[in-house]
Image (cartoon, rainbow, N blue to C red):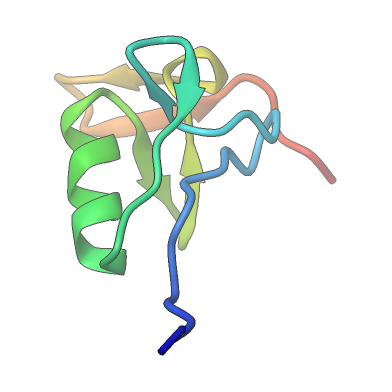
Length: 73
């Protein structure tokens, strides 16, 4: 039997880069929640329902706010 499965990639809403695995290949996740948790732990940010890689946002810890650097219109 061959059965299809759903896989998830994390893609930055700013620059459209995918979450890397060891900086070489794209990471694939079987669960949406695991994908989100992993990328947040790696420094990605969820802002207004969108995900941004570390190169596309800055976080002001004292103010508790994010500044988007590379935001697509």
